[in-house]
Length: 181
Image (cartoon, rainbow, N blue to C red):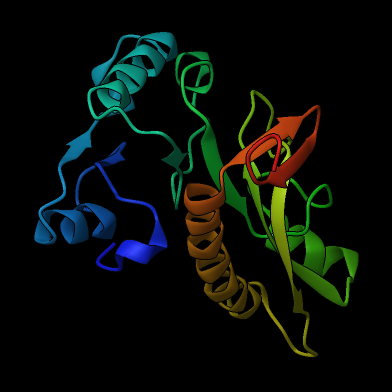
């Protein structure tokens, strides 16, 4: 965020629970934060509306999910482009256990995916992917740590490119750059 050539600026950090590192880092950097707990709402739809309203207060151009393990609802998805990551090379191994599923399948290469979120689970248009080899003797924890290292860098690179270059989506196809360029 300190490098102006990066092209993006963080306007807020939100979470669905207290005590997470992302909130502490944001507060330390002077970035506004908010917490919207699912348990504080009578139903999931009310939480979905509250999250969308809290996000809207900060007027972001892009919502970036990092470590947020809840599916955002229609009020957010219909209002903002939402970027998400997944620890597998989608469309293979979607869902909460992508690393475990890749290991169980016996793949030799897995990786991570940056995508635009949609109403499905890991079904949005793919923006970027990077491969991570599965090493002999890998267990889920070791492989997941290697994937997360690659995933974080890929996410930072992708957000910067989107901010600097713009993007378009046609059907399921994502392209960097503004129309007419």
